[in-house]
Image (tube, rainbow, N blue to C red; front, side):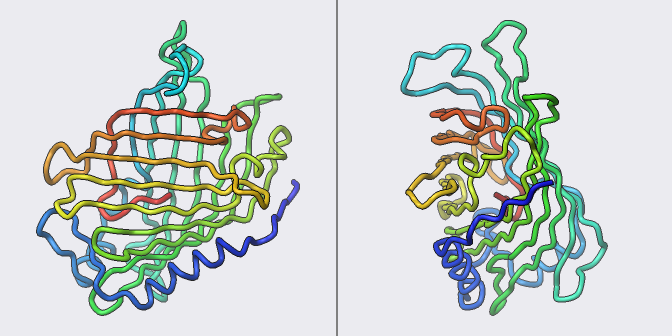
Length: 287
């Protein structure tokens, strides 16, 4: 097993410090799960203490799309979907108000416009997280999570891809409508066929999420910094519309620009625009 430790970049340290500072000093940010419904500290703590212990982890979605800058073909068009769940491991919070959970995410690239419609790339991402939520002046303002995770594609021989990460993630509600997030990882690259994965799949990420006051529209973006000192970023942008009031289901538009969208073809540059159905966790999505 070979461990690769890229140097800690100053920008990501600054971003994580800013997010932690927001958790320490913001007092008017709050969660609005539904229009007109304010979640105070007691209700959120009760929800975290009492469950549900099994639920969604990251965004779950099913979307179809193509390359917006080239003629659609079976090679540049298809379906992408993701299933992501988590399970709390304790019935109550741990010391310092923390909690422990297991999670599993599977991302699939399905080439539905080719003969036999093969699922060409399946990415498996299990892990364990230790999270600390922050409450300031009767308001939930975000959390910090230490994560140990694995990601691989289940292939063998030259198509095998695998790596592990020890990550520090943070998110903060700047206002009740605007949240920011960041994640930095120490990679442990054990896959023999993806030793250079940091050049394509990155070493840290940051982003934001904005919701309209009525919670019907949502806009978000995630930027993943690839290894190196130049401004090389993988960019993902989402726009969603909650088409049924008081649900967590959205019609959404997703745009991806960069490398590392999937493990098998992590070295290939992708421009993809997709539309589909998005299902989000009740409190917040992990990134």
